[in-house]
Image 1 (cartoon, helix red, strand yellow):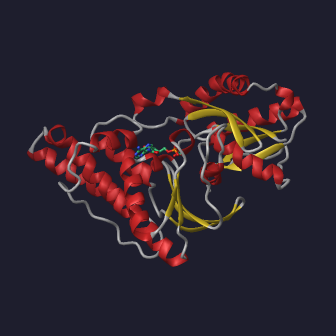
Image 2 (cartoon, rainbow, N blue to C red; image 1 turned 90 degrees about the vertical axis):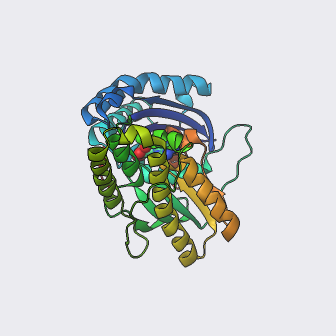
Image 3 (tube, rainbow, N blue to C red; image 1 turned 60 degrees about the vertical axis):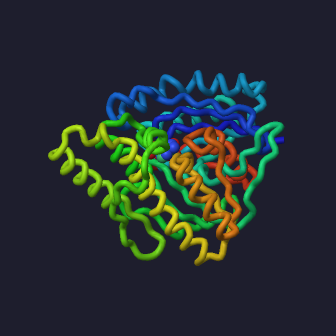
Length: 336
Ligand code: KG4
């Protein structure tokens, strides 16, 4: 039997999870509301909030799992990528916990964790898991990548964004429209009653399997600025159509390269991960394509697709089985 405590603190969610032999017993997430007023994550405030949250969140995860501290065999924590000050809180906590309880530490790559979220099992829940190799579209606030997963700990990146991430495009365009942060879920909600074909935005022409979203962000900004000059109420009068049209553009961009990657690799097991995988239009588009192209689709449920420690613990579990531990001198890394 292996019990892992997972810790996630890479951005603005403080999370702790207990995993027993691949089954998640608890997954506690404290989201930081403090950033909403600023239209984005403020790194300094995020570090402080992690410092405040980490002990209560870990205590609650252990309590909810119904285990004792002495039952934990290893602590897995997010080493990066993410905000350095935020990562330092989780890393320092992991070191203190490992020393105090004489257990090994396992470093986890945040992106790998988003992918392995597909392997989290929940007690009493029948779960479907992809088999190897499968193709993952990883889309979050910081990344947009296409990855071939050969095994739990063997992944190959075949495409990535050359500038902004898809989530960043949602968040920045939402800000232009005066919507709160994070903008992705708000756009998703407003788009439901909007016309996706009302406005047309340019799509990037990038060769290969790479993505680009900064052009879309800039053209959206200029478009809104020009329309506001003609009509100061343009945003308010067209908000739902703007959201739906923008969302359709982002989803089209994501799908085009995903389809290309599936064709090139011949892989038909498709997983989507990262915060943007929660987007309803993206999910619908992937399911529709699955029917057409015979794909089998895997999307972790919401609690495991946004930032969470369950995915860190499950990655830690496979690294534990492979004997991959890290020393107390390990430092976080902010970038991939
Ligand atoms: O994976 P995540 O929780 O954090 C990291 O970036 O690592 O992803 C957060 C991103 C934000 O950009 C947020 O706007 C986006 O995921 N997001 C969504 C939705 N839910 C979250 N974007 C579009 N539609 C959604 N429903």
